[in-house]
Length: 381
Image 1: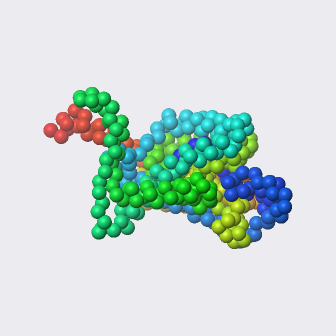
Image 2 (image 1 turned 30 degrees about the vertical axis):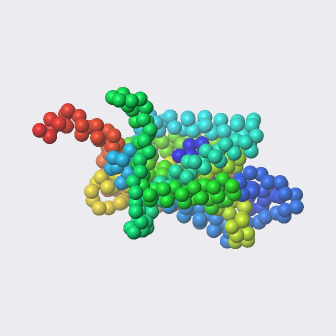
């Protein structure tokens, strides 16, 4: 989850980039005294922004669908992490401390060594996230003629009756194939820092975040989005911290797309970017509304589609304002009112507002412990 930078939609400086203030493929300042000024064409700009919107929608849509299955899973590796109201209230403070800490690190220490350490860290996380993302697809395309052997990775502590499991991970041949493919992408990213490899990891992080991070109710979602609304506005408009970290941080915590793709092809280097937080934070709220739709058992997805359309509207408005004023925008400034306001209006119109805010999601662990409790045994008898 990209808590370090809930991320704003950033233009690649401005339509005209001075040679001494250009943004290279790693998001850092590139000094090139001989380079000419770059002017983004309307076609290139439209392609970049349109691609960012499309890429942002993919993890939200598919992550929300997978979150419904995830909420019912009893497999420890697929169990979601439930965010409570207390977690939601503390999150903007923790995110602010982390963001400012990174800002100080980049000011005090060498940016090269910090990014090298972060690259290795996200190399490992990215492989695991991409492998988990590919797993359902691999299950469908894996040839039935090939043997799918089962494996188990088990670490224990102690012996005899006091033996305690530290790690108990079960996987099969399909998971190994996913891990191999993800490792190839990881090496590509580590060596080249190519924007496509960055986006593959970024999409995997975002989809896993939407799938595995669950809000326990709508009120918690409102607290989280409201707090991060203030956080995003302050760190973008009040200081230069957010923009500085976003451009210095060489890690797949943002989606990027070149505005000069039509001129330079895959070697393009003038990027527009969108922080993963602007995808994951609204995404987990949209996923919650989808699970609420499922709980109503009406075979409709009214709240999911209304919030999904609200997200498109909010992100489109963000890009419009950013392109108009040529300044980085806190995307949550537009996304939060849209993603919360649209479903609430729909609920008011349908007379289901009270039911929406009373909806409480029970984690698989709590449900399992409830089933094993003596009270449930008495009810069964």
